[in-house]
Every structure is written in structure tokens, then in C-alpha cells.
Image (cartoon, rainbow, N blue to C red):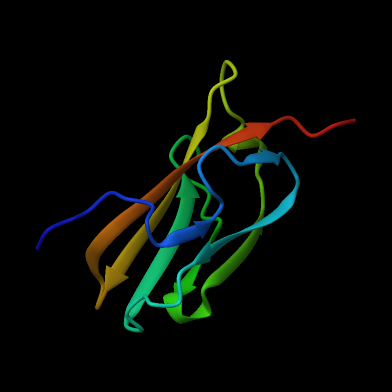
Length: 104
């Protein structure tokens, strides 16, 4: 089985999207994804926090941006979507987003 690391099936957010800590956002996938796949979404720098997940037939996965995902030193945070088919790793989609502090 080949594992791919791409963001081609994530249509939102796009590369460089800016999110604020505490903001209500979502990850949206293309509708052409095989119906048997499931997904778990999290930030690489906050892997202990699952942001959303379930069958990819849902296409849209809303969540609140956690403070643990804050981008360091003006950089970006890597958003990961781990996809599985029949409990086996299928692919990993990713996109870099900038997570900034919540405004007071």
C-alpha cells in the first residue's frame, strides 16, 4: 500500500489561510472521495487534540481552533487529515495554516 502526503482533497482551508485561536472553522473535502474512507483531523504541533473526524461522506468537519495549534515564530501550523479505509491507513492530506492568538 502506498501512503501519500498531499492536500489535493482538502478544498478548505487553502495554503496560508489565517485562523485565530478560539475561532469556529472547518475543514472541507472534495465530494469525489471514496465513501468507505474515514478521517481524523489534527494539527502536527497538537497531535493529542483531535479536531474532528468521521466518514468522509460528511465532507465538512467543523471545530474550534485550539491554543495548542498556535503557529510559532510567525510561521505556520501543519493541519493533518489522516484518512483510513477499513481501519488501514489510506493517505494523509495536509495544509499549512497560520494560527494567530485570539484578539482580546
